[in-house]
Length: 461
View 1 (tube, helix red, strand yellow):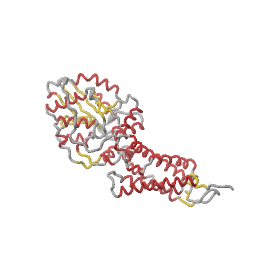
View 2 (cartoon, rainbow, N blue to C red):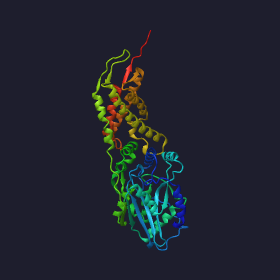
View 3 (cartoon, one colour):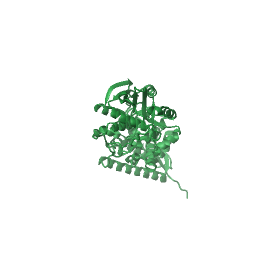
View 4 (cartoon, one colour):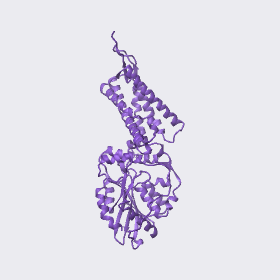
């Protein structure tokens, strides 16, 4: 019987930290790591619309005497303003008037008692053990009140037979061997668990009616739901490959809490709709690609400051330099530092993910043609520009190595350009092509023409 498990589940809750859609993690860097790896963990191959649930062993399940006294409610939580709650949250509330039972089932919990570093490492390796938590509604709803997130409650329209099937599934799910599940961001999360269990109770009706394709891709939803966090939106867009660019079915789109609620309402499966608490949603931030394109402004201004260098020393060789070097080279240093760090970090994540991670959604990402992990070395040169206010003095041999590096980089960019312009991939590259590629091109031109000052090697005979 479900009520006999309550003490055990509440004890479990005491050891659980950070529900995915409703908890708080201390530390923005850890949150970003967890978010990136959790989204990258999704398997975006086409899946059967009908969920394959484990059979229910009814032994030991004590059923209510009167299912007409049992009601189920869909709890839908709006998006929040933190990294981990921008898709919202779904839970299931069960009220049994005959036994005065009122519990909320939440599949968005995980155990962080092993430590945040080890937890994040497990995420990166693909070990994502989420679990079901059961709590009184006051506990569950109280955190959303503190977080300022809108919560809807809708009664599910179910027959007694359907209620029984759902009740049996919940009773099965809180057994020790079933309470933990392998989390998958798009296909097995807090919302899809509710969707799948409802579909099972409805005899597959929901999945059967949701096979049509939508006009949205997974990338569209990621961009839309992270509009309030431009840096996260931009990072996810860069780090994920073409596997998130196929159109979703209506069934797949119900990984989103609000999409599930809307679909159930259209099917006439919701009644007694209530708003338990209401708060304004987080405001959208600026377009991250427009912010990235702003780097083009100082780049173009620096191009206008190019001039032919005079031979001030016997050891120097003529070339190009920047006017007002004390200012312009520091501007170039700031620009270079931003580009080197972003490009290098993105390239490092994609490269290590491809080599050592089982997450398919960061394998073979075409954006590796733009962002190289070795670009992190450019941060050292950028800091020199920033601190000295003059070009980087290099020998002829070092200059040739740097120029070779840039030539190979440019060739990779040209390959990227051809792939994008001729539609040779399903990965959406248009935004990077339009807003980021010009910035990289201008910076490469500045770095190779005015960023270095070749020094003659002098021989005495």
